[in-house]
Length: 317
Image (cartoon, rainbow, N blue to C red):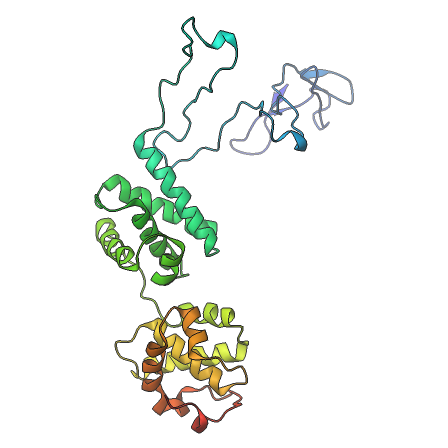
């Protein structure tokens, strides 16, 4: 017996007419639904949704008997639901001339193949710099939009994928530098920058401006600096921008100079080269930004900062 419970539209529920509150027992071998109170067969020929074969862990290397394919990919044109016929092994699979009787009438299109290769490249790059799944999904969607518009014809798919990854990171609020993206791809920084501008124009989208705070926690963490130094560096960089001490300077170079100043005033001192290797900027760039903020150093530190080296004894580069 099928009954509905609750108000409004709800899914039908199979119940025993004599014991509607009883939890039915399913006989998987016979395909029956049985009431445990009175033994009445309430439903028969129930479809078993379990696997057809048992698969054991030590049989992974053998032929997989399951008849399901990969998960559906909505980013591909065919939804990745195409059927591929494997190569036959028995005598019945070949005709008298040795040709295969059963062949694939439809193979994956060139556009789907190109997108699939790009998705693999995006996933590989994201794994190398520990990016989460939501950024990979956004990058894949951006690449699909650009590829279908055909607005960047002549550009390498790897370059477009790298630029899409850079845009996705900024849109998700976890920006990476061009050098970080360049380090995990085979594309030059200049080419990624060109594709970045072309994609923003083609998709008519925008990204938020990067600030010094976007990189501070990651740079300080990679340098092994304590929380107090990170907070001081963040405060120094923000005050320097507010006081207009670093006009025209990249937020990355300002952040590196602020970290250098904060570390030199603390017990955890770091060299320009150590900071430059993590931030991806040259030593001379850090020095130039440091010279701009050094004259006002006393005004830049937070009031509760515990100095290991006084301001007047900070390095004069």
